[in-house]
Length: 603
Image (cartoon, rainbow, N blue to C red):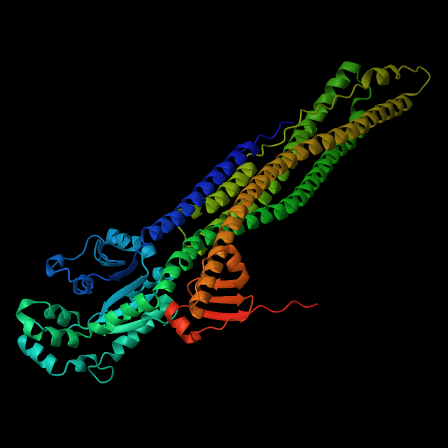
C-alpha cells in the first residue's frame, strides 16, 4: 500500500493563509492611513472656513473664483481643454476659497484626483453647472460629496453672449427675464433637471440651486464697462450667491466646522469599516461552509470506502469460488499423477483461471473506484468554492485589495482539487494462490486391497477436499488481508483530507479573528465621532456651546443611529428645547435628522 502524498500540504495551506492575513493587515493599515490623511487634511483647515468650487471643465469655476476673490482675469485660461491644472487657493483672514481643476475633462483623470484631494478639508462645496449642457453624467461626482457628507450649493451659470453689444443692451433692459423660472425660455426646466439628476447621486434635495450670470459679473469688473459696473453686477445676481456663502459662514460656520471635523470624518472611517465588515462576513461564511462541507465529505468518503471495499471483497470471493468450482474436474483429470506433475498441472490451472491477475485487478479497480468517488466529492466542493469566488467578485465594487478573499477561495478550491487529482491508486502486494497439497494426497493412493474405481474415487475425493479446504482457508485469509489493507488505505486518505481541512479552517478562523478586532476598533471610533457630532448638533440647535468632553457627550446623548450621508437619529438623555425648526436643521445640515427622547427604564 502506497501512502497518499498531497501536493499542497496542510503546512503549505497554512502558509498561504498566513500570507493572506499579512495582506489583509496591510490593507487595513492602508485604509486606516487614508483616515489619518483625512484627519490631517482637516487639521490643515482648522484655522480657515473653506469653500471649494467644483464642476466640469469650462463650467465657469475659475471665473467665479476671480469674481469672488477679485483675482484678476490673467488667472483664467482661455481656449484650453483644462483651464485650471492645480487647486488654486485664495486666503483672506480666516476664509479660504479654492478653485479646482475640471471634472471629466478629456485625459483629465489626474485633474479629477487633484479635485478630490481637497474635499476633506472643505466646509462647503459649490458645484458649478451651466444651462447650455445639463447632463446626468456630470452629477455622478456628487456621490463622492455625499459619501464625505459635504454640504452642497449648486450654482447654475446662465450663459448668454453678452460680448455682443446689442445682446448686452437688451439684457440690461430686462435682466430678470433670463432668470425667469416659467415660460418657454425660462430656466425652470433646467433647475428641475439639475435637482432630479443631483438628487439621484446626492441622496436628498436639501441643497440650494442658485442661478447667476457669471459673464455679467465678469463684465462688471472690466474697464470698458466701468460706467455700468453696479448695473451689471446686480443684473448677474451674484449677490444671491454671495449672500448664501455669507449665511453659511456667519450663521452656520460653527456647525459647518463640526460637520467637517466630526460628521464627515465618520465617512473616512465608514469605507474601511464596511470593507472590514464584508471581509469578516466572507471569511466567516467560508469557514462555516468548510466546516459543514467537512462533515459531508467525511460521510461521503466513509460511504465510498465501504462501497469500494464491499466490491473488492465480492470480487475476491468470486475469484476463489471459480477456483473451487474448477477443483472436481481437475481432480478427475489428474488423480493418478505424481506429486511433481500434479503441482505443475495445478499451477497451470490457476494460470488458466487468471486468479492472481484477477486478484490484482480487483484491488486496483476497487481503489480506482474509491479514488474516483473521493475525487468527485472533493471536486464538488473545490468547484463550488471557485464558483463562490467568481460570483463574489461581481458582488463587490471595492479596490483590488478585495481580491484577497476571492483569491483565497480560488486557492482553497484549487488546493482541494489538487488533493483530488493526486490520490494515487491503491496497489496491493501480488497475491499467490500456492496450495501445498500433493505429498500427503499422493502418498495415500498406495492401498493394494482396493479396486481401481475405489482408488480413483478416493484419490479424487482426497484431492478435491485438500484443494477446497486450502482454497477456503486462503480465501478467508485474503479477504481479511484485503479488508485490513483497504481500511488502512481509506483511513490514510481520510486522515490527510481531515488534516488539510483542519489547517484550512484554523487559518480562516485566525483571519476572521483579526478582522473582528479591526471591525470593533473602527466601529468604536465611528460611534464616538457620531456621538460627538450629535452633541454639537444639539449645542447648535439650542445655541449653547460647551467644551466637547466624553462626560458632556454621555450626559446629553443616549444613542445615535446614522445612515451616513443620508439620515441621523439622535436619542437624547433628557428633553431638549431646540431654537431651530427640524426643517431648518435638515436643510442646513443637508441630512435627514430625527430627534427622540430616551425611554424611561421600567421598574
